Length: 241
Image 1 (cartoon, rainbow, N blue to C red):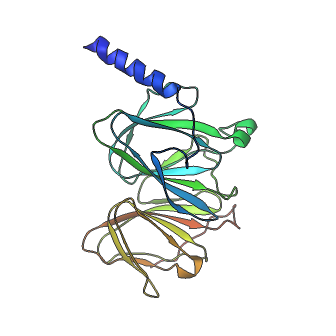
Image 2 (image 1 turned 45 degrees about the vertical axis):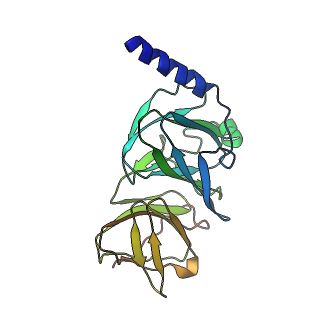
Image 3 (image 1 turned 180 degrees about the vertical axis):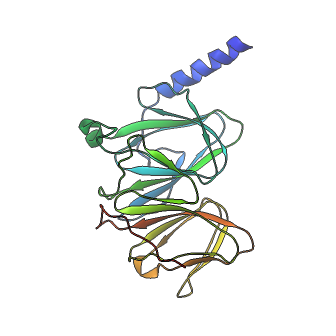
């Protein structure tokens, strides 16, 4: 049985290594949810024994939609390293000369996900189209709530609100991307109402941003990306409640 398992793992690795890296829009496991001048947002779903091998040419981040385990690898490496993921976990890919060569930064980076577990793997992948958005962490990084992280031109925050609690409005005007991790029922100024299931996203224009209040009966978990592409060097702050 161990020999059979090893053979299966080696066969799966060989298949993954033989895949051709595709653009996100061409990879069938990625589904485009939202696109504008600043971002492309995709939903990735991998059923058991499925894999996706894609080519990135810009800074990106992922948000896990449930607890689980996934194989992640870069082009040229074996797809055998498993990683534990947790619901709401936000992962950043380092995208600068600390971790990538200048040639790679120009050509882009290929990498893959493989799901060898018995339940689906799902994440939201955000590709930043503005080159001023990025981060300088040498190894990429993870963001765990309650926390926020300035990434150059944007600030990313993981938010968990009890019923009636509010997430304060941004101090500076700028659009926001909201990624629902759980089901959310959020209200804001000017009759703003966001009712989203986990895995759904919403774009809030610069003029429409405000404090967000959990108007539901259950805790609400979501990730907010606040954009300030004209200010890549200093972190924006949010008003206190």
